[in-house]
Image 1 (tube, rainbow over the protein chains, first blue to last red):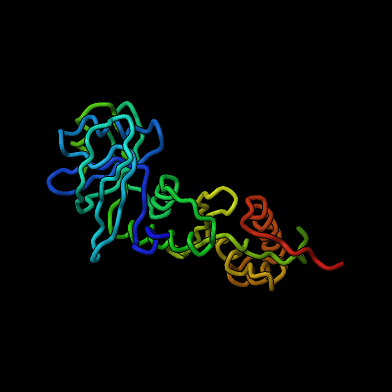
Image 2 (image 1 turned 30 degrees about the horizontal axis):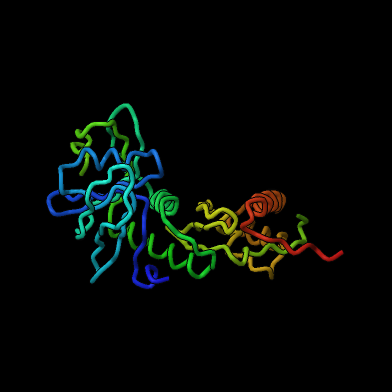
Length: 154
Length: 94
């Protein structure tokens, strides 16, 4: 699988660039990816549906992909270094919570597009998750449908 | 599962150690399972070579618990991991 050989993965996630860094918001359908994208300034959204994360020269970067969800704005064909990965939960308030390494792995796995059943490919994937979660902070983000959730981000 | 059964990691279960404990992606549903310290101990010894009884004996030494408690815990954990299709057990020979 090409993405695995290149140390990368596809995530169910919206990616928004702010101050030159990519904030990646992951979650399944209904978690709020399109909402986050719709609350971001024009031109700052790489994707509202599927993000490509790749490690290039020791740095994790987020890329836009041609896959779009409800937001349907024009995708930005560029990349940015990762600021953080946020597991989205819609809630009556904004709250950022750090999660354990194991919780980060579980959240990444449940949001990864992955169709390989072979043990070796899955072990490679676990290795990629470990490397990613040790290089980039992974958080749980409870948020309301308004743009002020950016205030609680690191 | 009998104490003489030999538990073995499912051949398609992918796993890693994180902070001294094991995480496994189950081959059945691709969910990540986090094993606690004792379950991780059993996992490392579930090579198909050792019986549950032998693993329990090692657990008793490692954690300084009596052999009956270790055997009961080991059997319960092996059953739990087998139900989740993370372990397979070769039955004891009669």
